Length: 81
Image (cartoon, rainbow, N blue to C red; front, top):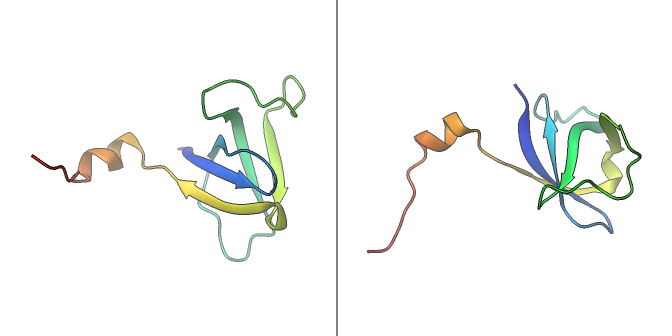
């Protein structure tokens, strides 16, 4: 099952993407699918019909791992009353 991540690339705005598995320390690159801007619009620098993109680690600043719906239901949110 694909996980949604926010991918922060050097010199670019953050984008949403899906990954099939968590990155491992031994990986040389990260492969993402379904890249889109945070508002859901297509990423302008990708050609039409691109299914997946492979980025070498030196291009990736950091990755935010978003919880799945199942994981989100198990998290207790704190709030002020």
